[in-house]
Length: 384
Image (cartoon, rainbow, N blue to C red; front, top):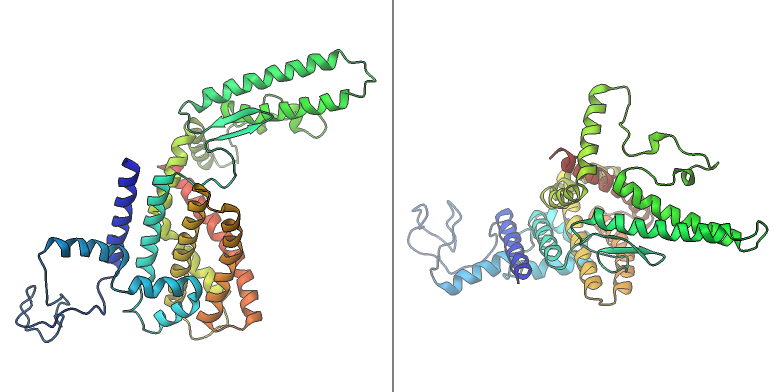
């Protein structure tokens, strides 16, 4: 049950942070009278015109739970005003928010925070997404389990599987020696031996930092020099940089599970970096469209990332619970760029052809942003 409680707590926390990012705006309450309980100003309406506090304050337990639900999903109507537009008319939502219609919609940052916390909650409950179709935590080749990531002693598991591969290699090599030199079966067995040795190299790299059969990695069949071994120190000619990179590489090799954990943890903590990383590229993709400011690009970027996060959650849940995963993944792959196109076209008023060209540029820039973000996460994991 701890997973369910953790997920619920993360969702509630996301709603609370979203509420902090977006205080009440345009929300009707009972007409006030008397003085504000917060600052003492004489009330002239449902809110204090001096400090903004609502005229009516409650002290009932039902109202307390209403505040929680209100903070999580904005049951005052903002959530349901925003979500349909975000899903199907993101450009209209972006333009309307920029031009001043803000009380009726969830702000971009509040929606972004909620989506990130919701993603964290879902992944805490169902685990990291697995789109390969393989049994979670395992991969196999020729009937041999290559790795079980759910096993805390994964290196011992991989060494055991490596021993099985070596036994198979020895069996095939003994079979090959018994065949005549002109046997038609020799090429088939030799190919099987090469495949088994390639699998063994992968396990050997992961556990020891060097290939067990380095001759397979060279095109001419000769052994590779030792600079292909992970145990070799980097030598670029800059001593300070070499010392740093060798130190962090040693940390990554010594405890890769910790590095992956730190990357996942930092991914949620520093997801906001996607916004400043993306804004310059959105500006580049919309260059030539006058009358737009960097604030407009920030609203566009934040709404877009929030939607893509929610879409990724839908895909993850469909895979986890086997709800037509193939159809959902295919639909998501096609709809994600189409969503970006609609947002570009209607938010910036581009033509259809112009929107397609700007979309192509923006998709290329998206790859750069993702690469930069992953690079930051890796460095934070290695340094931390």
